[in-house]
Image (cartoon, rainbow, N blue to C red; front, top):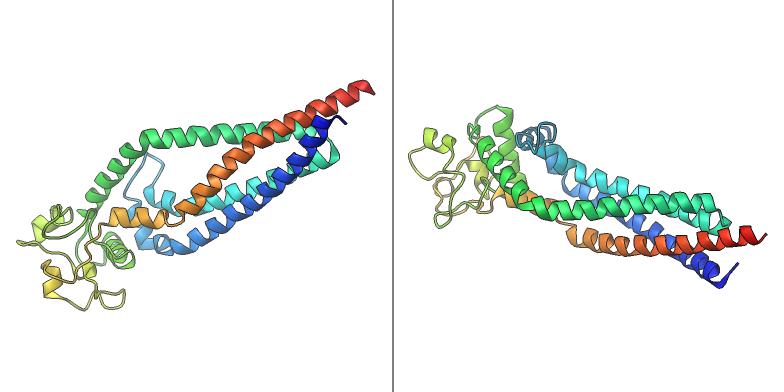
Amino acid sequence: MSLAGQCGSFFLITINIVFLLLGLGLMIVGVVMKLDIGIINQTEVMSTLNEVSLNSNLKFGHVASSLSVLIICLGAFIFLLAFLGVCGACCKNECLLIIYFMLIFVILAIQVAGIALWFIMQDKVENKVKDELRLALELYDGVHSKNEMSVGWDLVFIGLDCCGVEPVGPNNKNEFVNTDWYKNHSPRRHVPYSCCTKATEDNYKVSSDVSCENLIVGYRGAGCYQAVKDLLKKNETTALALGITLLFIEFTAMIFACMLCRSIDTRSKAV
């Protein structure tokens, strides 16, 4: 085998060993994320978040809950793809290497297209989610309601330490108290007890805090949109670092796969 072929084989095996580790790393990140977003998988919370429709078939709650599963599946696929690359390089099998190259090319194209689409659509998607969350918040009936939507909002307020859609407070634009729920049920600036820092899942239906509920002190000031976003982005730095490394390795792997295929093809013609 030519020097280029030998280099291609060596580097392709080395790169795919790194690929195996990256795939394993993505699976670990996905599992950690799945454990972190446990509150989103509660029935009432899921129903509340699913009031936001990204399109006719895509619900915000399902998307938020599925991100971790998607990362786990991506990691598993990369792990198997790396195994295919190692087998092709070790066995000098041109067919396996061609399949490997094509799969890497497709994944690379999808990743680049997805990143570009996200940057183009990010503001539009965020504004749509906020608007639909505000509409969903108007269905809130208070802490004593047994309505699944209301219970879901209470659990979101308590579990994510937030209140309303945008930040709540006397000096901020208060999206919570500008809803129809507020206009129809209270003559003053007011939040439910589930928005108070003392509220828990055990006591929010039976306790109260006048100072907190009147937005004087002791209320959760963060908006729930940002709280959900922060929860989903908790492992963003790790995932981003793995993703950038992955893109570079994918491109390099394609080059060495081509080098090895060319060397194998040249050797077979010589024979």
